[in-house]
Length: 102
Image (cartoon, rainbow, N blue to C red; front, side, top):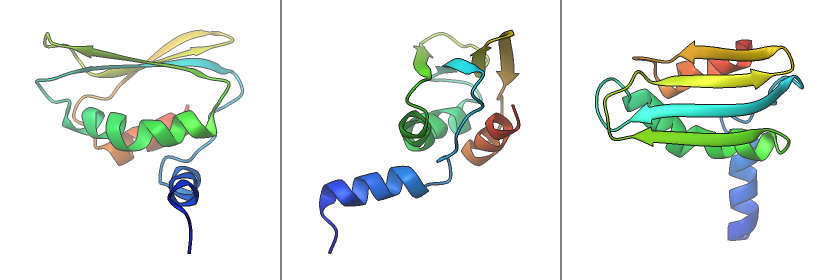
């Protein structure tokens, strides 16, 4: 029988978003809002971001949760500059796939 702590760690290590980002990624900023087509982005924030955070301890993670209507996006800061990923209308799984490609 696993303890609650062991279950938590197992979930972080084996979830869908338990991926290692490229070494060149230094920071990730998630920009979401309470309205518009951000449902997948909000689900990603709650369910997948903790797994990414756990698997990438050297990456600085920031969430901008705007009350104003904005386009959901992810900003990746890498050694070669910033890259903005448009995640409008994407499911949380599609967002993880898009991150794993970049």
